Length: 459
Image 1: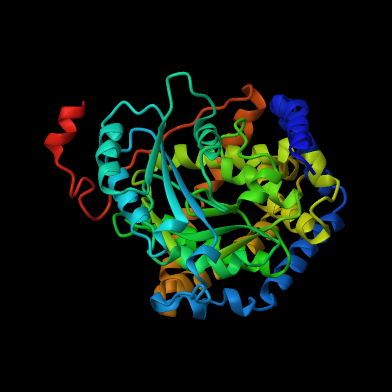
Image 2: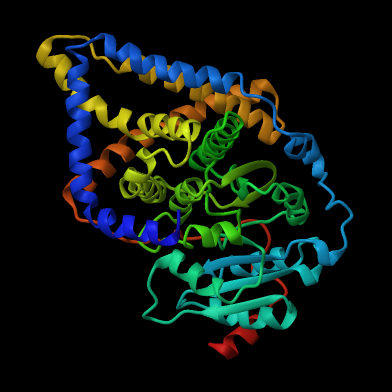
């Protein structure tokens, strides 16, 4: 698999997403209605999900090098007492557009990481900000010699992917770390990653994401539970040979792996999910770590959540449309293909299929076929969320169960999100619209140690 293979796939498939979505929806509707004429087929589908569930339940333990006991309570994996020059060089990147509220804390976090200062660099891409982001970065460069910046102009294209591709040519790291502007990064993160990247098949590592403002309201609390579910599910999928996924903030990619699959795709609205598929197609594995975690701001209103999740859902759906031929070719191997297929069916197609299932049930006077499968899936998700909450936040089972009840109610928002996204993709042409999530800053004063009067002189 080479970069040209992916570009060819995008050129021939990516520009026809609406048509492919319509065809896929027609297939889903036809197959779902067909279930009512072949009732035994739903047992086949339920059997596949049961097989996957049993595989996850009896997933083998992690290798010692990735065991949680090495990370809990602030303990880090020592970089094998290796000399500085033998350690991998990290390039830590972030794209920032109008992020004056949070960029100061991110730079402070990254530049003060506990790692030899001559073995990492920090690059912030100012993506044509119109606020004081540029002025804040100018002053921070005077304080932190490892900080380097790149400002993009008015004509810059490609959103976050374009920003990362543009700065990549200027970096010198063996491993590329990517953060969102609101990230809160633990000091021991790089030393924790060194032993994992010694495994030659590991192309990327995703840190568990935690919500910094989880206690603010019900929406942010729900996002905290959602992140725990996501991490635990990914952990189990990886253990059984399935697909580990990148989540954008707190992702680390081996430079060789990134070049192998052609860098970041500028024709998608979710660069992390797209890169996930291409890494696996190129035979790289992705690890997912519980400790240390990277914190980020959760959105605080239902409207913000709706817009953010719509973007995530559309980007997640796009990747299957763009690479369907490569995925069906089996390039990822049987276990990864099986895992990715069931995940796609469960996350997207099962939700869409409820509409034709209900219509067929009413017309034919049958019982709906899918509630049993959906109930089975929700029950497994609830159990996984409870385990994820307990393991991620070190809480009691009582607290984990109560948070799971609330978290599963919160998770129901995905049903209208998936339904609206698939309908829109059938009706509207391909869109590449990057909707910025507004960050307000959580915790310390963001412009701490920066003289605001100095900033004003640069405006």
